[in-house]
Image 1 (cartoon, one colour):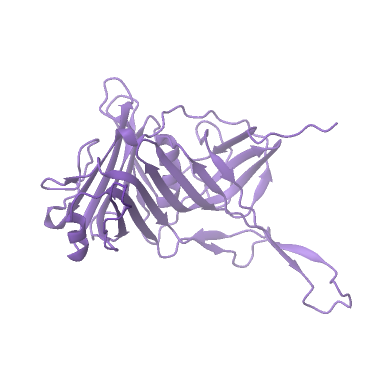
Image 2: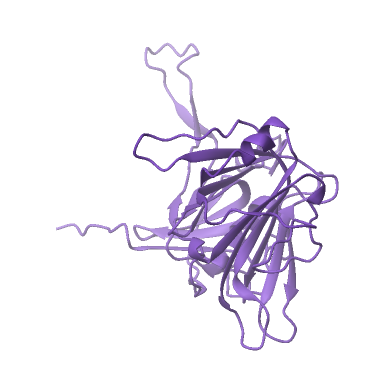
Length: 357
């Protein structure tokens, strides 16, 4: 009698602490290079290109042969309840630039994550996934898309779309330990909105304090019902010529874009006025959990700052006769000429991410 395989019996680890030395080189993952992850969903996204001769003359009605001409994979990894470690790891992979700062003498760090400068390559990592008893290393993985979202009363969720070289290798490494952290909760969050000449982005961010205004910004945390932040690298697969293994030679971003959507309880016409006047807006979300290390000043959590954005649709109130009225803030994100278009800072006890080996 055959023995069935169970979907819960999976393992996943990624080389998020140290990137590949060269694109598609792969990584031998220990606790120095990466870690395992829990509470995730992983889709391999394997979509190899198969070519046949049915469009050519073979003398046979149904053709004669078929070959794989490109190995392709675009994995998707989801964290329905994201931790600071998972957020720093995969947001750092997508945006590409991670600068880490230690909290004095204690083991606590903040990781400033922004897009890489135009012309700078994104980092690439390896992921090892085991399912159904089959353990595979996926190489040459770059971050393509990032989605952060959540609702009041719940936690922050994350989805990342990746693009791999197409290389998959049978793997037998032991899985590095997972990092134990609490999930990022929206109950620990706060939200600010500022406009016009009062926008001022602090060079050094302070947890649980507004960092976007020289005056007093709008505190809208009690009004926010949900949010969704999206980043898209528009990665272009570069197969080129000379790829003897039928895999990508590299992948590079196109014209990157980002947006932000917020559903809020309607209060008055303030934000309608922001749209009508096409006011420049700055937006901040801040999540502050428990202290990371006794004697330190950093707390597990994160901050998301958008220095310059505009409402692209009129946020008219809506709702049925028995509903509390809400409105949708749909922000398009722009460059302000000084700051990165999106700034994410993540706080935890890990020293660094995406470090060169």
